Length: 373
Image (tube, rainbow, N blue to C red):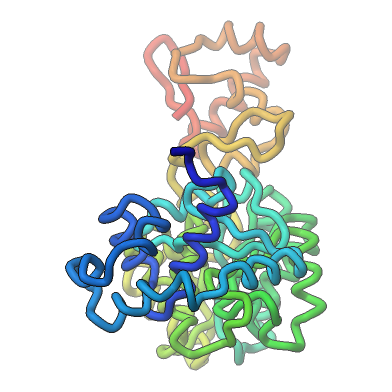
């Protein structure tokens, strides 16, 4: 018997995720139990009931899905609106999302997700923000974009919008993660902004195309924002702000949490002050973010023609510093080898190594010899 075609495999997974009550965790449990989405849809209702977390009502819905769930219409709507459906087995599925406890079974993407987007920072905050918050959010986003960091946010009013605009002003990439489906933009006044984001990155959602914005979907959306990022920066948040849920997801996902301080009597900054007291890194400039981040799990090429990035702080290096870092590996190299290989003078190499050592990007060994940290 031949294997199912890619289209039929995607349709089966799409149909399963469109069944009301089948979230990422249940979907993953069912596929692990039966082997594939198609096998889940073909299983008997009695077999489905035996799966942990699947009751009688959900088992009945799944068993009727092939007859009642129109996955073909959903996929056709995606094609008409320029949306790609990405499954976890797809090469373009973000590797950072695979690492979180409950990764989306599918992502709806309008635009493109690039390998360079693995070096990303989420920048979130209050919808009802101050002029100070808007200014700082846009400034940080612009600075991050200029050094090659993708800026991720939620396309919401206030800080989120400033983050996207700042990233694009800096000539960089930005990704917007929506709680609703991509058939419509929410909030509606951000339609123009959404088009600009698509040109500089992507709109992303795990919700079906016509899903409207519901309050319960935003906390779920926030886990994707943090999951796509190396760290989350909160710029203005009241004590009950949804941005704090993004910070909580970041902590649970072993991401870094950063917060921008504000006036001590400012309610919009109070949530940020709570985060700082709880151990979040205080942020004044983009260097505070880059220097706090640890080495990347996997080497990333921000640009095909440049050496791979192993630490986000390498993005802010000068050409001379990047040249020296690019020549170092885990094999110890002497200063003389670096001088010959780089074409720089001895004083230039030693001065550059001193800067890189202070930034914890290289390590000095006896000799002296150096390795990439």
